[in-house]
Length: 81
Length: 163
Image (spheres, each protein chain N blue to C red):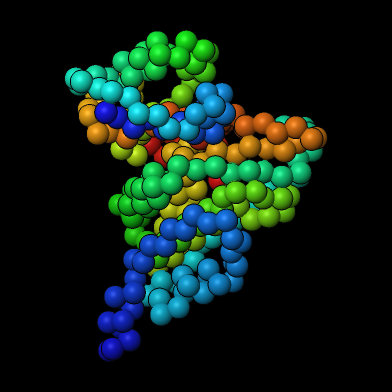
């Protein structure tokens, strides 16, 4: 299993802040997005926008590998300060 | 001699605070300066909520963040600054939650022996915070709430430090 978190505009678009996703093998962030969109076809638009991804609270690119137990977060480009 | 040792022990202190509460500039400068007579320079930046953005009037902001990752990313940014410049104490405060026009949002304070390192590190930390730290602003403008888009100019400003 992995824990998947959504923040800010993405959280509102999906109406979800956290879900668990079964994971039986090593995959990439890209695969995680594919499986989220397959399960929830209406999430496709939200995931077509520019998004950032963090694994275990470190920013990663979409070809980064994801393993069981990871905390994966998706969010829009940041706007603090 | 004891005070020298004490200074050494107290130097290079890093304070990171993510909070809903306001902060007091004078108190934060005191914290950077107290028992820190090694450092002659104190550079600070504070950011406030503007009453306008992109030509529209703004009445407030809501700040969301990613608890845990926010602190980690700020620690990393400060470590990068410490690696590049000879700096002493660093304080970064960022407010979250509901803020109104004129409210303080962010504080960055850096001490060093001389001004150049303090100025540069303070600006670097602020530039990197803008593009790396997981904060998001939702703006209340003319009765409508909307999430702000990231600005290309912020990304470009942060990239200048790499050249």
